[in-house]
Length: 142
Image (cartoon, rainbow, N blue to C red; front, top):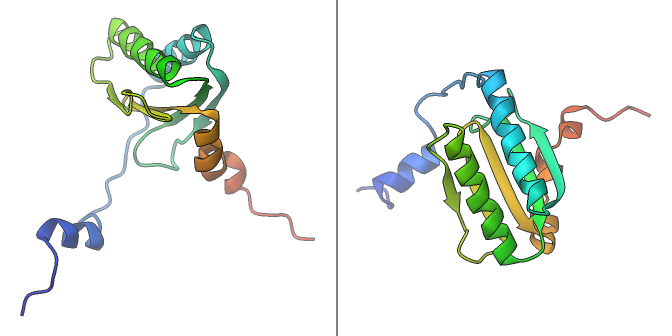
């Protein structure tokens, strides 16, 4: 008798066949793109811009940028501007999810992942708490 579930679901439950180590991105290029992203967000009046260093901590990126926008249209515009400016700088593969009117837009710029939130969504998801460096420090014994 076969186990229930599709092959895709079974593979997802089993996890990856082998662990793939990511090589960190070239620092000068990473810093160039990071500067373009943060300056673009600031130019578009994005608030509370936070950059988290994920090097060695995440398999999907080396940096995470989190920022807040006031309205869906502002957030969508910030995403479009980031995509255009990164393209002009030579980064052609930029993927955007949620730009059609949601509280959260995700931009995958390869080694940098950008999260643009409305304030209430940012507070609810708490990515800074989840990925912040303070979580890497063991609590002091008292």
